[in-house]
Length: 128
Image (tube, rainbow, N blue to C red; front, side, top):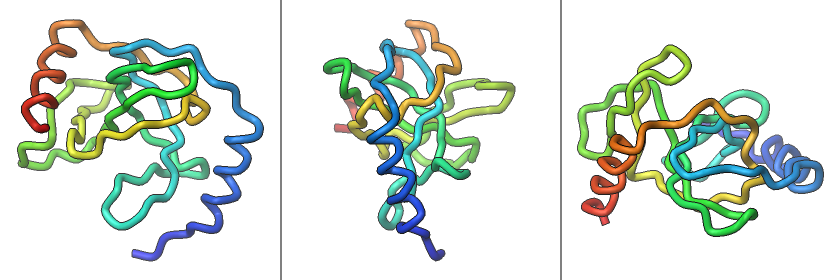
């Protein structure tokens, strides 16, 4: 699959220059500009390389750890079924955890219940 890194680089420069750091919280699901990434790293889609993510932990107003979501049901231990997000079944791709700058966050979709979040945290801790 051919990836357009040059186009993403232009978008990335705009996100860096024009976007403000967002106020976010743990357990929230956001649309995020993940962009075009190397190899099998999870890409976003559309013009801004968007993909929903779950906020796992915040470190400051500038950076947080997220895990991307997918609508693809893959039978492997690194996909965690989250439930319906915006009317679609969603799975967390726990093997794709990453640190992002909060300028990448676009808009909040919602949040998940604390009991589900604790299951996710346990799953991720067991992964590491």
